[in-house]
Image 1 (cartoon, rainbow, N blue to C red):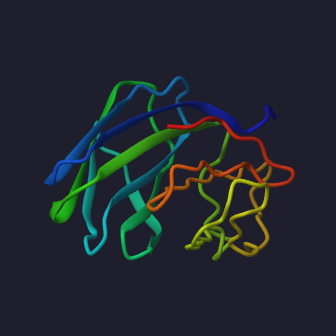
Image 2: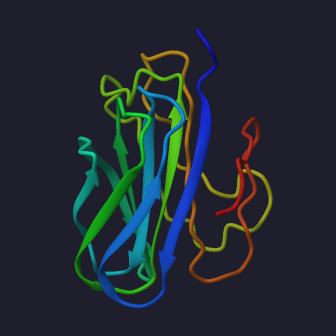
Length: 172
């Protein structure tokens, strides 16, 4: 089996308050999965994630540091056609952002690993490796596996550094 990898990613953002955000992506490989980290100002939630063509979306976790919230959503077994993804917030949320990351050569989210998603809020992590930690996930039964992560910075312009043994796929 080919290695699990990031096929591509795209982002959309808008600091102005509104109830929706649209992000577009055209996956390269049918059967891939999408990882969709979404962020907005604190105090809001995600009412829905809807895509055209239709995909089955699931929220995996959410964290809020009192300034900004971050939500992780996934969709599996996607088609290799253009997708318009509409995110609807619980109100007129400021500082909205999302990036869609295509994960190729995967059988999808590992639902058997009940704690496969981990999240953390780390105040002032610095820029050194391993500055942000979430603790361990449960064992991943689906192999090969790719660990996909997202970070946001709400109180500094410093960028997080990839942890020991991990590779950054870029800054969005």
